[in-house]
Amino acid sequence: MPQDLQVVADFATAEIAVRGGIDSAHLIVLNGQNEIAARAAAEQGAATFRGPLPARPHPCPWRTLVVIPTYNEKDNLLAIVTAIHSYLNVDLLIVDDGSPDGTGQIADQLAARDARIHVLHRAGKQGLGTAYIKGFAFAAQHGYERVCEMDADFSHAPWDLPRLVMASKEAQLVIGSRYVQGGCTIGWDLKRRLLSRGANLYTRCLLSSGIRDNTAGFRCFHVNALQQLDLSTVRAQGYAFQIEMAFRMVRAGYQVREIPIHFVDRFAGKSKMSGKIAREALLLVPTLRFKVKRGRKTPLPT
Ligand SMILES: Nc1nc2c(ncn2[C@@H]2O[C@H](COP(=O)(O)OP(=O)(O)OP(=O)(O)O)[C@@H](O)[C@H]2O)c(=O)[nH]1
Ligand SMILES: [Mg+2]
Image (cartoon, rainbow, N blue to C red; front, side, top):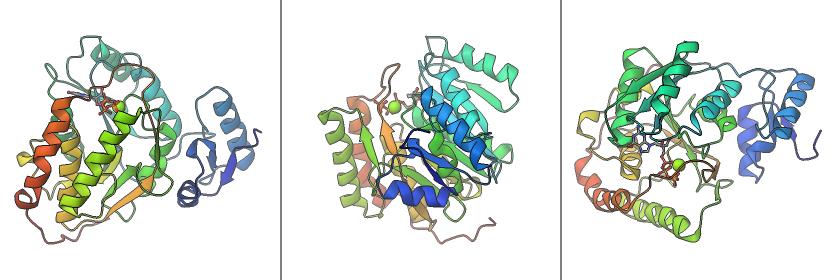
């Protein structure tokens, strides 16, 4: 076994290890699996660059839907879907905005051979925010208990998805965070790092919600908590959407937890980050304090 693979009993212990500086790619999380089988699978996964694979996908304690918005992700889609399903047994919803590169057709082929995969096609690029709102509505309509946000580009490690979902036991929103102890970004140039850090500093100063990574796109929500929010008034699209959703959850009195992740820049495909997305966040944040009303905490069944 490679020296740097470490065995931990469960996802809570894994979180402590990541906080302490260990890369989750080097953790074998047993979560009830046989240690010898888990070590063999993780070792093989590490050797083939598929991460610390479990012996079999972890079961999910709640009915969970992972929403993956896609625009021109043909080189990532099959790989990310396969990777997610090798770590966690969950349903997936791909929301494709008529990608010119044929991502939507790949999504249809995947859905045709696996009943856990669903696809929503929209005509033309309509932005991340509305893609997620559609995904949240799908989750509510189909009786899911948890709904996750995840990018298709491997910036969010598939082996971190079980840890993200398991952390939602007590928190109505869990954020995979780059800016708590143990979290980081890998592969971004100085400009990109400054932009993300700056956006978060700006948001923290203006909103004081206690959240360190407001723009993160790796999240797990309780569906019944989302149902208490009025999402029909959310207009934001890019990073601003993530800022607004996190702020709405805090204002509604829900518990928000951040767990550390290592965010890796995409290898394949192009970023959709633009000046327009940054400007949207710059203008929206000061208005959120007035726009989003403070709510009373609604007790929720778990
Ligand atoms: N459906 C849909 N998906 C989108 C849209 N814009 C981006 N995406 C997807 O949303 C996810 C995040 O987009 P990225 O291009 O990685 O944007 P980003 O994460 O802000 O930028 P990078 O960090 O530079 O990669 C990816 O899976 C994209 O394919 C859109 O308008 N519609
Ligand atoms: Mg990305």
